[in-house]
Length: 199
Image 1: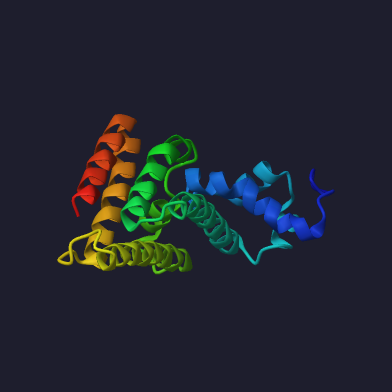
Image 2 (image 1 turned 135 degrees about the vertical axis):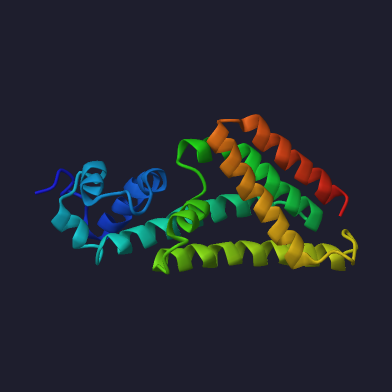
């Protein structure tokens, strides 16, 4: 019997997802073993696989959890703003504030999943790609709103700037984590904020 066998059955899947969310992000979806899952949850292999079809099923649900946590936290910041420009800047400020937690917990879940699975047509790659597309579409919609409200130039292409913005954020995360250099992250995102002010 697992060490956490007292957990009600209905809560076991949620417990496993929450307990392994940082583990998958740090060790990678391929690098995380079943024994790692057993160790961090205190559950047996049987208990884990009674709630998930296989390790890939766990990894997909963990990715969804990590992405939803990020989206919910960012949405709170973005939706508190009333202008399109304010929303874009709020999303940048979110990452500036969120960076210490992101660095501690293994980086960006979307970036990690895409890099790890980019040479294989896996379900996880498709899930991460969908998350990236969702981020792009949400950002582009804010820019379109800003154009309609005369906050941004009508010459700006919403989809193109959304991709540019995401690429700068994700690139800044990758470089600053690799070099352990928060100042570089702050410099890149602060410069991006100035570009948004001039859109």
